[in-house]
Length: 76
Image 1 (cartoon, one colour):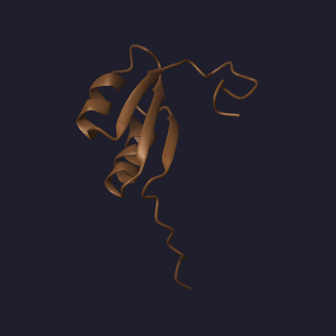
Image 2 (cartoon, rainbow, N blue to C red; image 1 turned 45 degrees about the horizontal axis):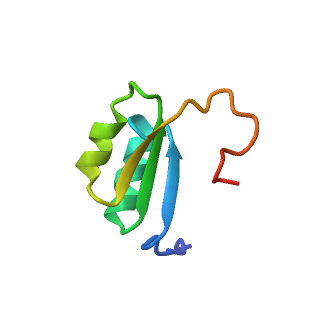
């Protein structure tokens, strides 16, 4: 069975752990398909440099969400 494909163009993704690994690969794929991305990761993760590499449709927001038990402000 063929998978249904939905365009992500114009959407904004908030990606925790977005500065490396699976989070970064996810951001690269989404931005490559026309979405915008916010990379959430630790302040010393190198996220700023990764966001710059991905271009104008990507920004870095330093955050530690490891202890968050409720939605982040602005993400509820």
